[in-house]
Amino acid sequence: MFKRLFSCITALGLVIGLVPPVQAAETILTLTSNGEIQTFDRAALEALGTETVETTTIWTEGLQTFVGVSLARLVQEIGVKEGKLLATAINDYTVEIPLSDAVEAGPILALKLNGAEMSVRDKGPLWVIYPYDANADYRTEVIYSRSIWQLDRIEVVQ
Image (cartoon, rainbow, N blue to C red; front, side, top):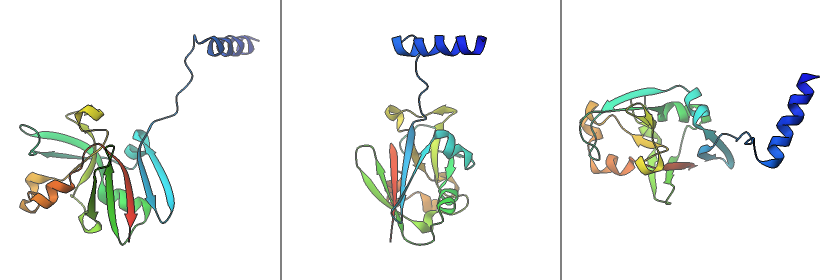
């Protein structure tokens, strides 16, 4: 009886706007491969496993701590073995990232910067971060150009 009464009160609250509806998780990454589209919210990306990269960047001051999904793990998850990735930001800026960059201890799709989720204003929701301090090969104009922020979609192309 109590459950039914509670359900009726909740439904009435929804109708008159007193109780906010449960929101679906927000998609922060859309991935297209072989004509199939996959969407990921923050929780789905984090469920793939996260890695931490501590590095300096040319866009920030001092040592920064980034947490995100490794590009290698994402590529493994979708089963891509050849081609390249076209990474696109919310403003439609697009960069090409070769699959050869998707290596262990390589770039991550950063979800957090110094413990906080990144807003669009702060280069989020996703920022491709390479471990710049770990390898001089990651400190080149080509790699910096692949370090796309405000990333929201990736397309696998052959």
